Amino acid sequence: MQSACGLSERRSCALAGISRSVVQYERRPDPVDLVARLKALAAERPRFGYRRLHILLIREGWAINRKRVLRIYQELGLQVRRKKRKQVARASRRPKVVPSRRSESWSMDFMSDAFTDGRVFRVFNVVDDLTREAVVMEVGVSLTAPRIIRALDRAIEERGRPQRLTMDNGPEFTSRALDAWAYERGIELHFIRPGKPVENANVESFNGSVREECLNQHCFRDVAEAEAIIEDWRVDYNEVRPHSSLGQQAPAEYAASLGPEGYPSGPTGQAAACPKPLTPKKR
Image (cartoon, rainbow, N blue to C red; front, side, top):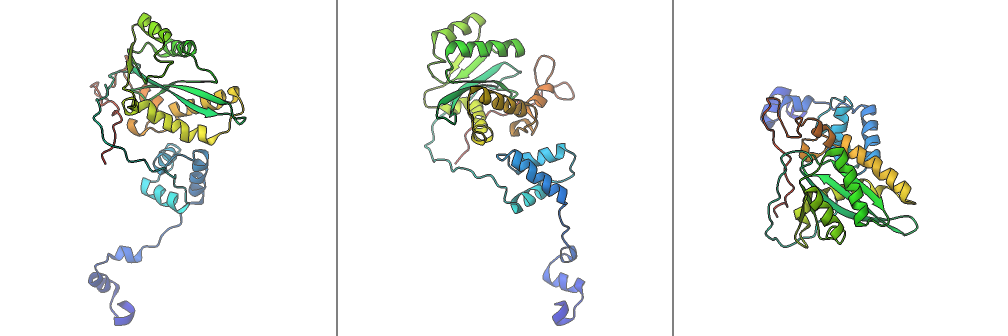
């Protein structure tokens, strides 16, 4: 309109319904060091999406909003590929009991992977249902009930005795040894219904993070190497990794904000909201 009809910029923008600031806007190039740092973080943590990377940048002191991180993230082609979930039939599910304090309720499960020579090893995971902390990650070729008990005893010495343990119906969990151990310590063993892993959603979600961010990112030659790498990842998960259900805090950071008895408390001393239990999304 300006060149063809000789109108002013103000009149042309008014007729076109466009703000003058949009017409006058010139994009500023993104700082080279910011782009380089985002690429470095994405290379270090290839399974982190732009939201978690944005949290890490904020922690490092970058003054940048989430939308700008998303734009740079997409321009660099750093998107995380996701597998499409298989459509399943809906079924009625029992609500999960939400714990009121730290170490009140733990969830536990097993995972499997293989060494470079083809031998299979297992990982025994225990997660605190309130703080989402990785309490135990025991690695071994053979994880029997006595070894599980020893790992749980070490965790209890460090964190205190839980009231309830949630698990599936695996043979290690249904053994007489574990049942006698729990009875002696006054711990309730809560078994989910067969074929209903959603009832143990906290540890199932944790297993997915372990698979994507740790096991799939490394090759393990033996048990010692697997133990060292997985323990380093556990510490990083607890102390650094932002957790969406904790308001993007790391689990250890959230645990440190709890009251002296392990109960959530706000700045006024009143009880704060506990993390939401994982529930299946509506389709």
